[in-house]
Image (cartoon, rainbow, N blue to C red; front, side, top):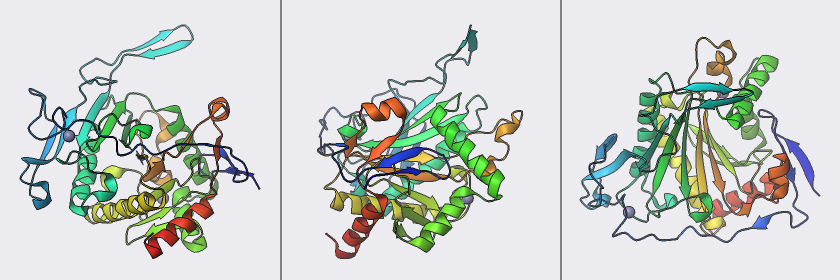
Length: 342
Ligand SMILES: [Zn+2]
Ligand SMILES: [Zn+2]
């Protein structure tokens, strides 16, 4: 039986529709291989003189003597550029901002075709540390408002190269979808005087039906109003609005949880294409009081989204996603796969 569900924080509605073929199911395309010889992210192929934003020297034996373990470089074809000036302009009823921003590539490993679920813990910890370092650095540029970090794995997720990498895009405006979630989080806090995500963690740990994995610092669960089949969120148990505050211990625990989730998804869904999205609070502007409460009412988290279905005209028309897999069934299946290793 299908039903409509509302996310308690963002307020978005979804249709959970297991009874009909509501979704276009995609085949996996995660193991597409682009040539290593010409890969711009492989050691030895570094295209100079690219300005290197950050590099971690290689101390890990599994990286076979590569000169670096991780590098951050500017995107060669950025959608936004930090060199441009920030110019705002009104064109009658329209607003326009120059293409100012930042677009960085985090080359996550010297290995050319490593999928996330095969990462060693120590390598993923470097990636999570680099995310923190880049966020905290770009936060100092007061022209930026929102910093988005995400990774695409597989062609269906938007990846162009098989080399593992994540991207950071910083914009001088807060995207509308993020704004809706922030507004919902603030309204929840105003109404209940508690963080909605902290409440979510408490309830999911008590109910257990949508829980997928937990460790000392994090829980992973399929959200009640999942927009996508087998979508998993990973949330820190300790309240914080800003990923930039993550501690070294939390990085260990987050790497463990992210790997556990990706490993179980890889087994359960035969290595699906996957997006991983970091949701962290925007940079507050002291003059604009509407976001002054971010510290108490937002709670950073990761969203892991297997790309096994494709949005149809209905999703584009309404913004209301149709999900063919109830999150309770998805979580139950993922727990079963973890327990039985199949
Ligand atoms: Zn490569
Ligand atoms: Zn919280």
